[in-house]
Image 1 (cartoon, one colour):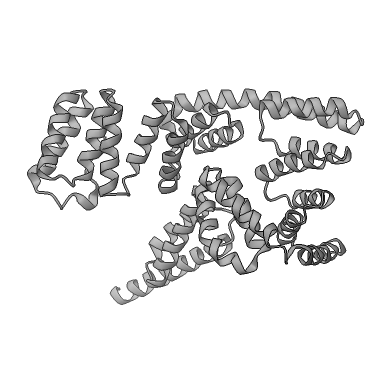
Image 2: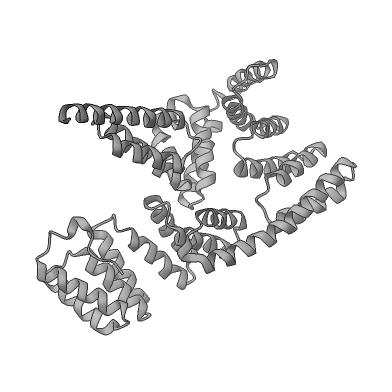
Length: 413
C-alpha cells in the first residue's frame, strides 16, 4: 500500500491527504470495502491522483478482482510512469494468471528502476523457472541470495536450500566429467557433463568442456552451442570467444567468425603472435564478406526478429554483430544496443545513473552527495570501467571537504 510520495505531499489540500491516509489505514486493517470507497471518492475529486489509482488497484487485487486491478494500475502509470510499485504489482497479477512472460516484462522494468528490490528479483527467478529457463531462474535466485534481505528470511532459507542442493549434485557430476575427460573416457565424460548441466546449467566449465569434446569430434555446431552458453555465463573469459570464432571458421560461416575474433581481440589486451595472426585472419574474413550485403543484413534481420520475440540476449548479440560487420550502420543500432544492455543488466543502468549524478554533484561542489553517489556506483558495478575514477574522486571529495572544514573553523575560531 502506497503513501503519498514526498513530491506530491504539498500538491493536495490537507483534508485530501488525510482522506488518502484513511484509505491506507483501512487497507492495512483489511477493511477493503471501505478502502475502495475512500479511493473512489478521492478520484472523483482528483481523477489524476496516481497514488489513489495505484491503491485502488491494490484493493481490487486483494478482492481477487484481478482485471480491475490491472486497469487501475495501468491508469496510474498513464499519469505517472515512475510508479515502480505499479510494475511490481502488474507482474504479480500476471503471474497469478500464469501469464509468466507478461509478469517478467513488468518485473524487468521494475528492477531497472529499483535494482535492489529483492522480492522482485526472487519473483523473476520463480517466473523463469515456470517457463523452464533454469539458467536465468537460478541467476536471479542467486542475485536474491546475495542481497540477504532480513525482511524475507523465510524466503531466503527456502531459496538457499534449493540452490545449495542443486549445485551440490551438479558439482559432483562436473568433477566426474573432468575426471573422465582426463582419462580420455569421453563417453562417460559427456554423460557426466550433461547431468551437471541438467541439474544446474550455470557452471560455465561444464559447457566449456562439452564444447571442447564436440570440437574434437568435429561436431562444430554443437561445440559452438556449448561455448556460447559458457560465454553467457562467464563473459570475461576471453579464450572461449576465440574457440567460437575458430569453430565458425571451420564451417565457413565467415561473418560470425569475424565477430567472435573481434570480441576476443577486444577482451584479450595482451600483444602476442597469436593476436597478430588473428588480426590478419580478420582482415581476410572482412574482405571476403564486406561486399556481400546479404551476409551483413542477416545479422540485422535476426536482431530485429529476436527483439520482436523478446529474446533480448540473442537480439543484443546480433545487433552487436551487425555493428561489427557493417561500420556504416553502427550508429543506427547504438541506442538499441544500449537499451538491451540496460534491460539485461539493470544494475548497469543503475550504476551509470549513479555515476552521472556523482559527476554532476562533484562539478557543483556538493562533495558529500558526490561521495554517496560514487559509493552507489561502486555497489552496482565494483569492477566497471569507471571504478578507478570513482575511487579517486571519492578520495578527492574527502580531501576537499576536509579543507573546507578547516577553513571554516579558522574563520570562526
